[in-house]
View 1 (cartoon, rainbow, N blue to C red):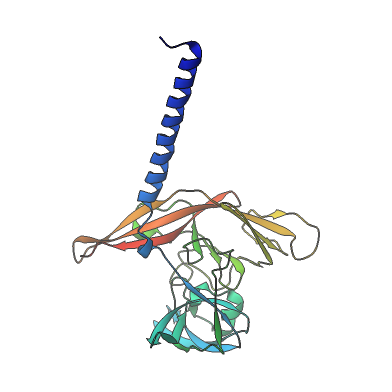
View 2: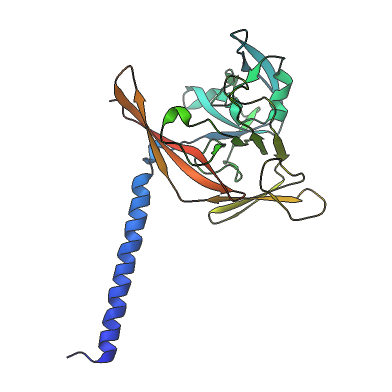
Length: 284
């Protein structure tokens, strides 16, 4: 017959086992919600070693035309890109994701009636060399696996409504920009100029929380003033909500589901935003 101490020890062991099983179940559930590693959104980042001239596409919905306009990316700029030509394991050409560049870089290309692309727009092919670019790590201020574009709220159930909300962009070159969604504004519902914008001057990461510091308040965001002057007057808290949700994309022509998209959610200034972090093809 067990004494009281033995019973107490047995209860403690059983409680520990239950706790471990619970933790394992939680971890497994989270891992099952994430897409396979090869399907996570990954980006290559480079820093320019000299000014880079390239072109971006703008659209004019009224005239139903598109036009390529030249921009100059300054020396020292961090860009998000992809190799498009590789020979003998050497990168020869890349494209830069212009939708990840700040308004400050792209504004010179804007003409009356023309709109910048906000989603996954690419530059023209750019010659790559060690004299022009150097590979760098993904900046800490860009949330993991995301391309830097986040939408206000929780991801909708249906794909067509996914991007119909305010857009927060953390650019590769270190700006935070907030665009107000308006169905009557441009082909994608956004104006060219952000309603709020700030240059990120400092980043601090603590576990699943990232703090962005800048000198001016970013209109529309719940940032906090932490200093009276200088480059670090305002602080924005970006916290991973540890909440992955999925969407399944239906192709009406094929009458089949063709892709599953994965979205992470972040509390930015205590307001929830979502961003795509992965995609799996279901199309055979």
